[in-house]
Image (cartoon, rainbow, N blue to C red):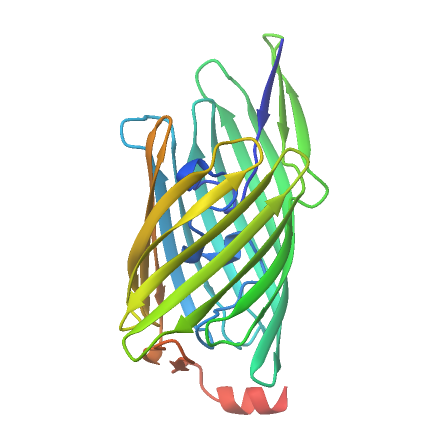
Length: 303
């Protein structure tokens, strides 16, 4: 008897599968989880912390959460980095994951580019009839370009080498755990309408050996802070679905949430990102960052 468990991750372990979409979720809350080279597209970056969770009301084993902290400004390690912990629970498995990513960033005039890597460690445990326990290592790579005023474009390869593992249990059941190598492209920008209104567009595309997913979306913002909109998910082996999303965005604090109807019920996802030492709001432009480290200007001039 063979029981196949196939995981396609996008957040560190793919914990947040908003809108019945295991590949993207609400990536606006934490871009580095699907591209380890992620830069802040609206600012110069800063130290930050973020968290998020996903669940289906009325469904016991379909939830996940993550915590992350790091720094995506021009800092002593030269580029964006973060560390994260995630957990996912489904009907058959619970996964705990630890991840660390680092990106080398380079200023190019008004633009900034980065290439990055992420290393992850997973501990997976079977639930109920699926009795097993295993560990797995994974790696992701990516690159990103942004003008730091709202436009960004990136490319990433997740699950380098398609890591997999087979577990043979004492009761004779074999479990196969696999993470198919996945190619992702993402882009977005801010289109200013007038002094009070702007529109945030975003596009994501994913492809691996099992399926392709295309996800366009957008939100309209009032006073560059209060956002409301939605998106669509087109998967090669599923019916098209839609999601509603909205929240509050500023240079210091971001809160976004999405809700999507599925056959099993509504899927809810939300998350926050908090930035430290930000002096003023971006308002669609470049943030001003007050850094606590001394002699930072000398470091930037002479490195």
